[in-house]
Image (cartoon, rainbow, N blue to C red; front, top):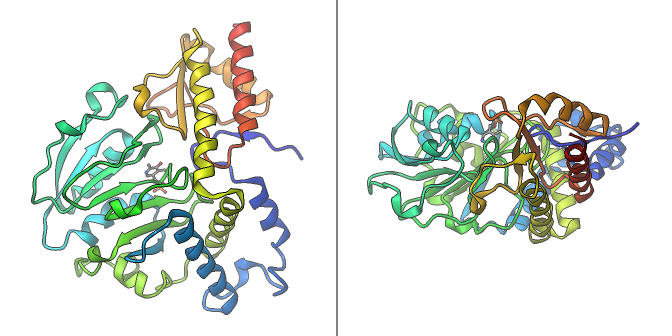
Amino acid sequence: MSRVYNFSAGPSALPEAVLKKAQQEMLDWQGTGMSVMEMSHRGKHFMSIAETLLADLRELMAIPDNYKIALLQGGATAQFSLIPQNILGDKSKAAYINTGAWSKKAIKEAGAFCDVQLAASAEDSKFTTIPERSSWALDADCGYLHYTANETIHGVEFFDIPEVDMPLVSDMSSNILSRPVDVSRFGLIYAGTQKNMGPAGVTIVIVRDDLLGKAKNSVPSVFNYQQQIDNDSMLNTPATYNWYLVGLVLQWLKELGGLAEMEQRNIRKAEKLYQTIDASALYSNPVDKAYRSRMNVPFILADSQLDAAFLEAAAANGLSTLKGHRSVGGMRASIYNAMPEAGVDALIDFMTEFERTH
Ligand SMILES: *Cc1c(COP(=O)(O)O)cnc(C)c1O
């Protein structure tokens, strides 16, 4: 068996140690004689897995007590519609920053449930920057401001948390757990797990308690944050095995030293990859240097005729899934927590050699 370095944007590489542990425990979880997949979600074994997961997430992200955590299904995409229905209360308007493909989707979905104020947009720049905070238009009657902390397709990331006078809502699907964040600055944080937390199938919602209890009556119970939280996110059968795998990823992060350590690693990995791109005549990345994502590094080749050869040679060198999103073209290297520094080094060596020979 040989594993490749997998640069997929999501579902994406998982830490090898996590996969091995899951393999070890597959048939018999800790002497129970059964797989986690086969356990009742109400039984004490699974309850202990769930409790540990929540405690570890709280510890790793330093989530304050007045924030509740829900583990839901439907991906971040479901949250695009559920957030306005759950937290707007008697307000009818919310503000959104448009920094790329995922913000755009969030805006479109929210538009069915509230008036969207487009506070700022980077569309004119083809999503290569983040509009200056001073240029944002924020009406006081907006119930929240939404932004996408990391644009997975365009490779644009917020490194500062915006200062605003309304609850801040952030889609952190592709950069959650990549560095410490001050949760107390947010009203709500959400993330699908398949980028940086585990396999697909779980969506984490971290919400400040004053935003709970405001859901419209029309919201189905499984999508009602308050009801799910009151039921430990087990109002119906949860994606049990996926919760378990997310739990293993959190334990792996704790063993490595937590999010401050991950931040150092992620900075090192991203910096050397961008340096390689910037020093090259063949590769380029169009994003404003201040906002270049540490998680998703898109780059194009000066001659797109070389794309196919690049991808083929990369695959032959054990470097997989580097093709860029169809809307941006070129390449994209997703280098989440689970991508070891050696994987980035291997990519850099390959890119350097490919440039030399083409
Ligand atoms: C992948 C992604 C989504 C969509 O996640 P789904 O689980 O497919 O709904 C939303 N936002 C961001 C930033 C993403 O990277």
